[in-house]
Image (cartoon, rainbow, N blue to C red; front, side, top):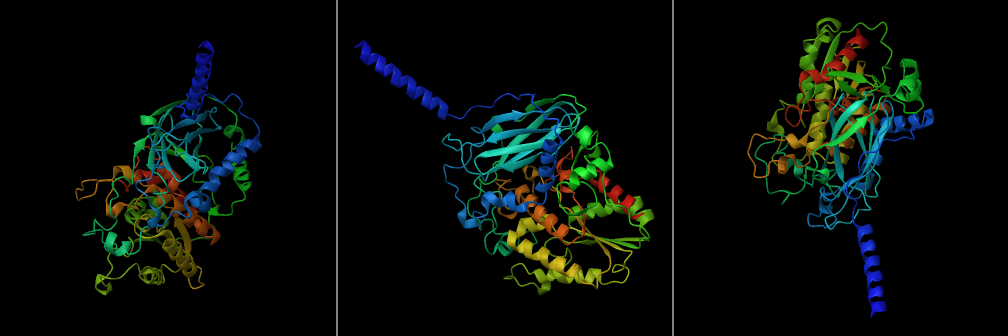
Length: 483
């Protein structure tokens, strides 16, 4: 009897250990990394990962490349990630001036740690001595690495939210969405039944049920303070990444007391023998805000003789819609014709004039990724024609905050309705990274606005728009470059 009981107890113990080891671990406490390397090679490796992220659209979408079509969506799968069961599996909190990292382990609805990628985790660090925008890297094995360079020591609070799972963040619109889902870019009277049940697509739930994770960063005078101490050393550091681009500024940085501080002060050398004539800004409603700030600043009052705006959504804001049939899908020729018309005037098509443009937020809302690629490739081909003589600058797309969505019409599920189903930051990131890469390859100048906006302490005023102060660093940069 004792022998039988002993065998039973041993089997029960083994079973319990097996069960316990299979259960997801709950969040571990933040650990100070005591093995921080003073090696420049380690710092440079992380620095280059940060810089490659903004152009490496292929790695960004790699976990979902074969899952982007709408018919791949599965709303009943038990493999969907549970934000409550998921957890932080490891912390590496380094002293100030070094890269800190943490890893999120996604767990499915049945409590199993996942071995695949495709989740969209959103991470904000806006409470602390600085406001920063970490980069989230999908390792395609259920782990998501959060990478951030924190320069100011002190206590920070990070918010971590699950936005989408099973590649739903990168999902492309189905055929005829432009006509039925956006009403050909009018955004009114759309067919709310066109996509079916999408109530659970945008999740917007905090990791492990916690709205904030506390981190304490110790002071240090090494790392960043040694390797990027001036313009020359920062330039060498970035040059070692072997990324060829005419970036007007580094783009990466943080906000401290509502002032933008780039990690690197390196920027393009000023234009010499340049006598500014006309500045033409082309963009959406954020482009209009950018223009409004430029118009009241030295950029338009003193640097350029004339400033003008072309406002564009999916089509020109004031397009003559009588020529658009009710059955028409997106027609790229309307956009191309707009470019030709607005760039034709002699005062715009002039060696001393500048064309700053963006095609971003509205296209991620209404088009699939291949359509966007085709649009940008056509625009670049046009602008590379010898007939166009103006200086060309791509203004990077800004981040959106879908969680703040509050559309004019009241919906039963305001964060999940047809018109804004594809209006999310994951597609913005993908479209932005592709655009940045091809604009760099075309040798156009680039102002990367994404890190600046994603780190902005106040975020968006609604789900899309920023107050003018968010654009001020870019305006100052243009003033310095063209004056």
